[in-house]
Each structure stands twice: as structure tokens, then as C-alpha cells.
Length: 282
Image (cartoon, rainbow, N blue to C red):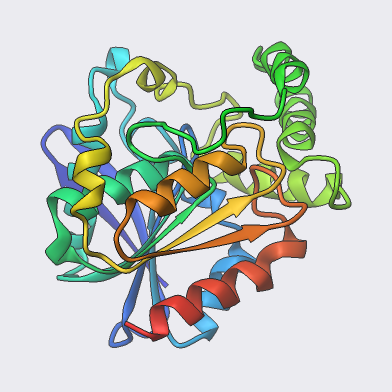
């Protein structure tokens, strides 16, 4: 394991390099307001054990990376951050895996910097145009309302941990067994890594920031792509993954029954096996 701080402009990005440095690289890009610790260590170990070098990093405004006053940046800046991490680790081309917001960054890499990707995996995300193939989407209004009610940070570590676990309960969905202790350990790890129990919020405003590319750009993308769609995802229901896979010329869609907007231990092997099968062909 090797930690590296990557400097790009006025921003310092914490990153971590695991596995054999000579092995093909997998580059993990986490979702909004989540640090590299959003990738569970046990899941990362499965990728490393598959014979790959794995690089993960903290987005700006998360973990040990720079906190940006007033969050004055957009998706183009976040994409440049990802490229800066690859450059700092001496990686010309990587198997990119992006989840949620990280999937949007992965798409921007595929559209604007295709030479840097060996393959692409897009998990729990939507297309750059945020379109969907289904006219009727599940009504998640009640669940979303419960999540909004959980937005206020806790006053101390314990109350913050309880809040985060309650939020994960909503994101996890109702079909797979929910292990509160598992999510608590994940958040304890994230808090210890960041050095504060205060949650990251800098990416919230990005939801209102126009994406620099859209459907027509994706139709021209040539990177072999695996789209992982969770059946119980409250943010990106089934139609989003189907729409995304339909736009990309070289994409395969895998729908994961029972999974929500999270990476629970019960799905680690399923996810790792799907990703490894996809990238071994490239």
C-alpha cells in the first residue's frame, strides 16, 4: 500500500495505491460527498486479489483532500482531478470504475479522454443527459423525504454515526438483509480517515450544475463499458441504467436484483466478479 498526495492547481488530493505496481490498474472513482473510504476495504481486496493494482482517491472536499471554500468548481474540474491522480501514479490507461457521481466522471473521461481508459464500469448511476427509458419510474418520494429529514449532521460522533447508519438503511433498500453494524464500521473508518465526524457537503451544489456533455457525446464513446444497475436504487431506478447502456455503442447491462444505492458485503463478490470478468476481456 502506498499513499500519495496529488497536487493539481490549488487542490491537494489524497490517494492510495494497492496491489502489485506492475499489475494492470483499476481506478476507483467514488460518489458525491464520499471519500475513498466509500469503497469498502473488503471489496477492494477482492479486486487486488484478482491480480490487479487498485488506485482510489478522495475527491476534493472529502476525506483528507483539500476543502474548497464555497465549492467553486464543476464536473470538468472533478474530471481533471481524476486525470491528475492517474498522472501522479504514472498510469497511462486504466480500467475505470465509477459509482454514482463517479459514474458521471467516468463517462466524461470516456467522452473527452478515451485514450486513458482500458475499460469502463458504471455503477448505480445515470447517463450524462439524466434520461431514462421508462416513462413510469418507481415512486420513491416517501423514501427520499426520509433521507432529506436525515440531512442535519449529528452533534457528536455517536449521533452522527447513528444518522449515517439510518441514511444507509434508506439507501440500502428493503430486499437485502440490512446489517447496521457493517455500515457503522464503514462510517467509523470514513470518520477516522477524514479526522472529523462532520459530513462532507461540498458536492451538493453540483446537482444544479449543468453537465458539459450529453447523449450525443455518449453515442460516440467507444470504451467497452459494463453498466451495473441496482433494482432498488432510490436515486437511479432501473430505467436509468437501461437508458445509459442503450446510448453507449459498446455496453453491457447487468441488473442486480435486490441491491440499493450502496455496496453491501452481501454483494461484494457479485460486484467484484462482474467487474473482473468485464476487464479481463480488455
